[in-house]
Length: 542
Ligand SMILES: [Zn+2]
Image (tube, rainbow, N blue to C red; front, top):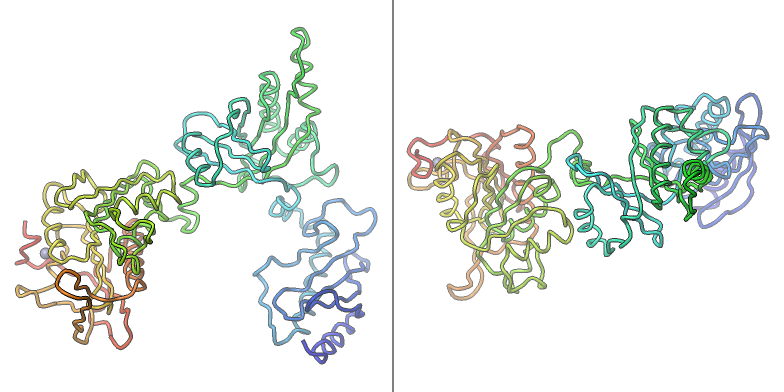
């Protein structure tokens, strides 16, 4: 930032009574002044990022006698006047930007000191609660009680509704199941009240503090927390972790509620209760990591592939990338299953455009892909069928995805899909040497199959491109002739297919034929559309 830039900023801030203090770090300049709020002037320090990328930092001197917890005012007087990313900053008008931030900070400070933003304290609860992470791996289908997998050395905890399942996740995280987790206890209490911090005696230090606080929020929840902790104390369970399920958030804490105290039978209940009440409370920040939540948090209110039985035929260049996207969308989770079908071996020269690398070369593609996907999604139910699809026992499917890129095989699959009960089928392929990618959804017998896209002489009726497709081959000798195109084309084919699957899940089937041009110089020959089946089609004739 030039000296002129600093001068312009200083001139602007002088109009609000601020004085320049000096540099405060790399590209940071500090100012001092005061903001009017709640009928008085409050001294503030303003630190301006001269690049204009970060809003100015405002630290306010809290007046004596003000409540200990104020909305939007964090530790040390740091004033949160705008959530990161909600302000549009103009890097070419730094003085104007800083002045509008100062005005906004004054308005927020005024409301906070007047106690008019108490509701916001619910939103900001975690700022005041703090603590170590507590990961919740609890599925809606879990029927057993909760288990606590506690890693005191790492300062984190896993609460599980199924320790066998969570163990798989821990292995992926390079953790091993703690041997003594059965001596600990976890429980969840549902409350109607969203938490907000108390103005005094915060954060709670003992179980007694927590119970007093909960009593103000929701007496029924307070009673249940007390009952569960007392049970843990008498049962000599340690640590005891409580998850509080509030309407808009979950939070947790743990305590050692028995402390190894020997209880004389006559006074057992009274002494267990006394010890429990005095036990130190450790606040925890709760985060859901159950499969259902993780697979749907990026597509809220949309169905996922969890619970569906899906076969992906062809684990080559399209299928490899597509399998990964399907697992991200929930395939193989819940009671679902993802079948990977491919008889081929991944050769070292395939890895230039395959999802798998050299570490899986000379292995079957379906088997290697399953191993790779389970590293990152250890609880997914994925089965590899390293055989030709004609020889695979697929059973009932919700969706069959053909990513083989082999036209003749697609026609055969159409016959198979029509036999017995109809199986919805999605075909994904690449046109020519990476010129376009296409998908065709056949969700009922009245819609076109891939063979219906050409006439009796197999001349395209719905060409992908206006221009003629070039014919390009590479390689030497008939054994290794291949059509060259880069991995970027396969990734786009996989994306187009994954989008079609996502739409189909949400009940959107049209347009069933979709095309994306992937090479410059070509234009799309057929707009995305539905295609009726061709009466004389030999593949889908019933
Ligand atoms: Zn057909």
